[in-house]
Image (cartoon, rainbow, N blue to C red; front, side):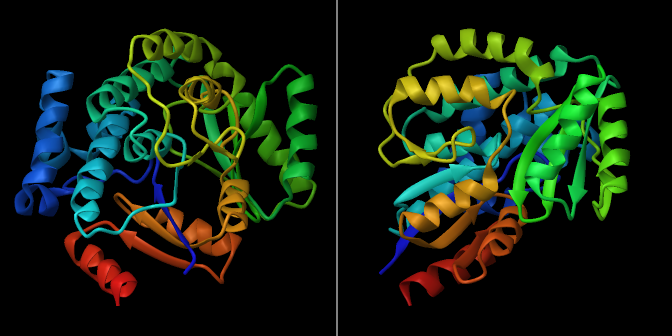
Length: 312
């Protein structure tokens, strides 16, 4: 029997009504939403279930909303007795992974990601930074392009190395536009501007990282009980000191998702279970390696299907 990894989605997977079926059907899930409302002292669950998509998409709302929903689904799924040998999450999803690995309490994590969203929002004024997905170009080639544009005084860098032929770049609006144009000149298939509120995972996020470090110092981080594959190094880590350091670096470093998936497979993982709204990571994992088994737990029906498939 191969090993199992639980993986958790990041920003962009949020949708109004996500997790409501879990909230209404399971006490464990309801508790998580109520803990979030209490920890943040505002009606986050009301925003998730009855709010509008525009408000939910704001970085400092989307981050706690996704963490809360993923954790609520995880708590219910764990009752099946299926456990993970490894965990990982895409950007913000790393916090859900840390909760799953008992390195952070849910309350600490939800407060941390709310602040993380606020710090990211404050670091670069709206409209000054952006991101774009570049399709059909190797990371090494794209890095030459971003280095060239940055050297001209328009900061831009690789932000998410998601899967073969799909890399997100991040930086100033000018930097991203110039790098997108240059990448296409040099053979990239497409460059698609992303609807985001800032240049995440770029050097422009360093002011946010400093503030996040101060916040994390106040929390009770613990060593992880399950290895967490870190976005920054694409390797399993467990020590609380390293976890804290990598969470800070993560804000201005690329998300090495492609390598993280390869690391998990090298460590014997043949079954990936995405827990949280949407199926974005399932798609990315498939593009990295078609031979692994991938399940997504995003509503009650998909959870039942996954449990049946694994338990037989």
